[in-house]
Image 1: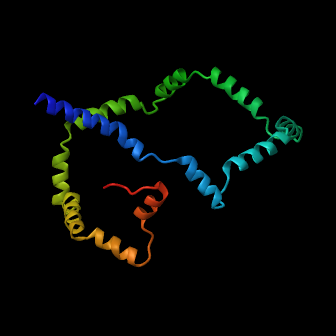
Image 2: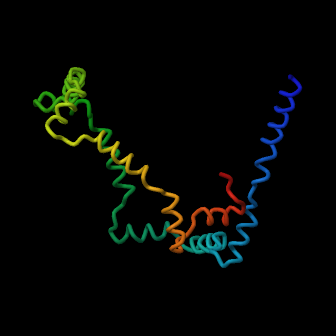
Image 3: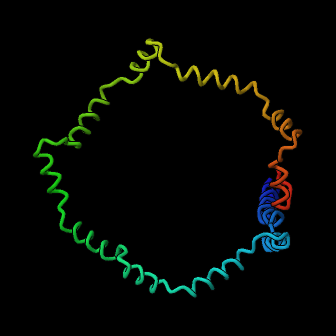
Amino acid sequence: MKRFALSILAASVAAIAIAPAAYAVNFDQLRQENLEKSAVDFDRTRRENLEKSSAVDFDQLRQENLDKDAVNFDRTRRENLEKSNAVNFDRLRQENLEKSAIDFDSVRRENLEKSNVIDFKQLRQENLEKSAVDFERLRLENLEKSNAVDFEQLQQENLEKSAVSSDELRREHLGFALAY
């Protein structure tokens, strides 16, 4: 019995080690095929864009914009940081509370205490008795209706209308048939 179990274990380990290699995709080959099909060569485009960007002096453009009275974002950022350091939000919050502003912490606590008292099942039942929409019943009806729809038949009809088969496209692009 132990021999049988060990042989099964060894076969499983071998299958696990070998199976991914059987489905390995040669991405370099696929990339080359796409390039031969006159697909966009992103490497070439990237190199061209890098060559163009090295010709542009962004520091010079930035300085020209500043000379044209453009917004100096560095200065604005520094000013905003200085202002935010000067603001004491805890003090402002306390002042607002003293001005009889809404104390959201206490309102939150009150609402949490109320939610422990509210019986949502009872409220749901009352709403149903008031002829409100019974979503559970609608959900069950829709599930029953969806069982009547034959999605495979719909897929076949679409394929007959010369629609694109996503399974076939997937197989073409991956280079091997998908196992179901």
